Each structure stands twice: as structure tokens, then as C-alpha cells.
Image (tube, rainbow, N blue to C red; front, side, top):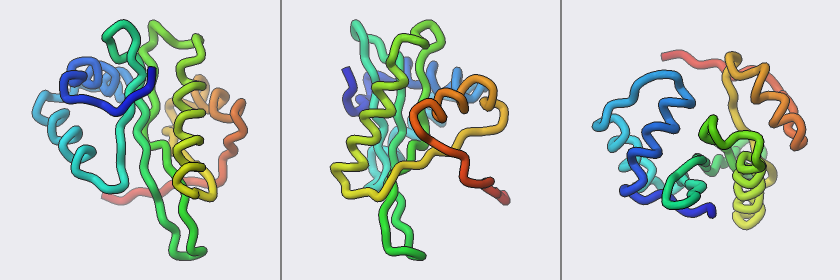
Length: 140
């Protein structure tokens, strides 16, 4: 079942974020992230729940493009518990995001995936019709 996150899901969400990033996330950092999402008009976090446990996350964001006056959706986070992969949960999360995008009149959906995930995840995205369109540059 896919639904919006609840604060009571925080331990499962923390575990999944840590699995995604391969790093520890403090309780306060997690709460700051959840508060940010909860107060954002363009971001949402959905969870895939099974037997009262959250085993998948979908971060979703709306991006408006002034260069062509259009709207795209962005999958900002997608992760499935490693114990539940290869069971169609990632596919359901992608399809859920794409339906949200259609409902919100988005021109398309894009996602960003790091180079380290290339071997395992990029093929998954490509199998659903996503194509690499360039590089993302970041300066901090």
C-alpha cells in the first residue's frame, strides 16, 4: 500500500534513508527532513507499507521550468528495502509517481541518480523508459 508518510514511520524511514545513502542519519536530521517535506508546497514523501512496516520510499517534487513554461515532476528519492527488492515494489512506486505527474499536468518525470548506483539501478530506470539526458553539476 502506498500512502503519505506519517511521523510514526520515522524509524523505518530513517533505516531506508541510511540504506540509500550508506551513511548514518541522526534523529534530529531525520526530523528536520520530515518537517521540511511536511511544510513544503512542492515536495512529498510517500511510503510503501507492508504489515505495518515501511519498506519503500518515494520522494516526489514538482519542478516548474521557466525556459519553456512547463511543469515536470521529479523523483527525488526512491528506495526499496534490500530484503524486498525484485518483488515489483520499485515498479509500483515509479508508476505511482508517474500517475501523480499526470494528475498534476506535468510534461514528464525525471530523476537524478548518482554514479555509484549505475550498475544496479540505472538499468532498472532504463527498463521503464527513462533515458540519460545529461549531467547534473553541483557546487556547494
